[in-house]
Image (tube, rainbow, N blue to C red):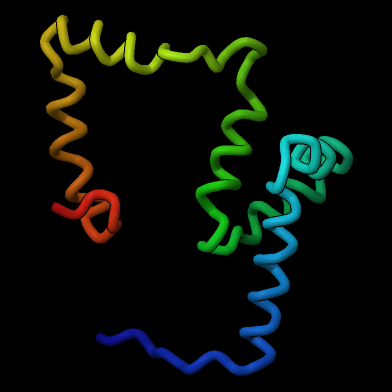
Length: 113
């Protein structure tokens, strides 16, 4: 069975553009994100649950992850250090990631071969 598709109307396109602009403003800076996410937490949860436009979803995801990170979480070189340590221990995690990425993100331009 095929999914029904329709061409978005002009009003749908304008609404989507307005949503993208609002989300871009919310994630434009750490200060803006804190103001959005902490000033009215119920509204924040509702907006996220209703959906984040695909155009800004990655930036919102990063902002949400950083919002819960403890102070000092971001240490330059930490990721590389952890990767090197894991590689020395046998690298099973990297093997699994190498299997999962093509399955889950095969269409993403960054992961194309």
